[in-house]
Image 1 (cartoon, rainbow, N blue to C red):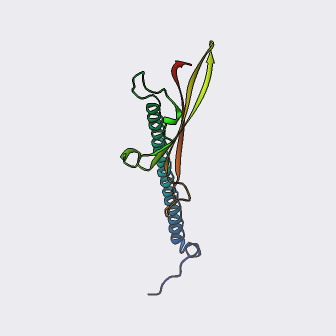
Image 2: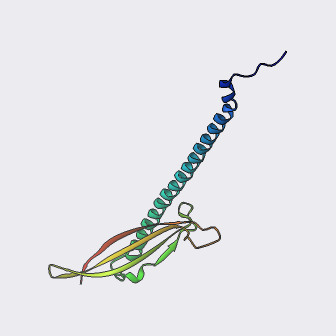
Image 3: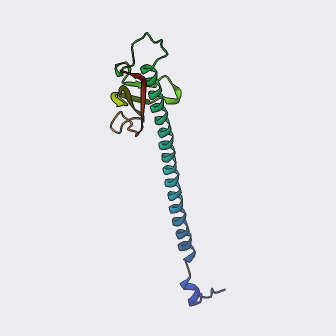
Length: 158
């Protein structure tokens, strides 16, 4: 009825299962934290990519609007193209695909001579931006912008 004392080799191993279990729990927690961070980073990269494409589309839309303002469907009797006809900026609040995006278009007239003839070339620079600036609003976000440049020739000599 007396308990036999444990041999010395078994006494040294007492409690080792708890240490192994703690080690496994710590390793699994570190792996879970690393995977969580990886998923957050992946989501942020996806957001930047989508905003980049939307900013590019906003810049493209701004160029197309500016080109139509510069060269509308017109008869030959109307006034010639001029950079003063190009609107400087625009927001796309009513467009669900580009909501939160804006575009700024600048126009420069360049006089070019070739073969003794002078003509006017219009350089349009369109900057599309989606998102909010870092310091704006209660919930700061990030902005992504894309820039497109196009040159248009009026096709007439002066």
